[in-house]
Image (tube, rainbow, N blue to C red; front, top):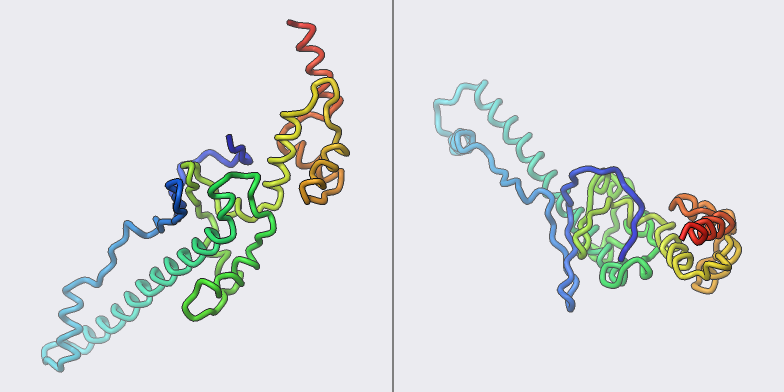
Length: 229
């Protein structure tokens, strides 16, 4: 079972869906799939007449058609660039979070940042040019991703460095000896053994964010439950 930080309950439509069939990991771009943009045929016909030098178009109409085409082309090009950016982000996330997407949270890449993602985009781009971090951030802002297990998370989830250590903390506590619950110092040492060097106060902060009581309180709660049985 994969545990994730609670996020606001909402109906979220993902921009990307990661898929895993047991052999191959892939992605599908869902954002903008519902859009089929084209310029109004009426304006296309008017523009062609102007280009071909056909008389009959008042000067005001010619200017209107030119402005319409300019705005329409800019909008359609912007949509295409946005989709292209989302696809590049999907490729990098699939590469950098492959183990997590296939095997779950214990394999989450906590080292990935938006800055690194922007730099990595150069590796999946035909022009080998990275995107500015602000461009990447805008493309992901308020957007969501569907994971192979069907759950939906925000893009911000992939850059939360607390995800992996929190999962380990939860698992350590679930497997602890009820008579000798793990203190935050114990958890700190267990995490260090897994290559995660965290201060004790950071461990305590993560534990509290998951609403897990201290070792003292966990022991008392278990003792009380034992007396009630």
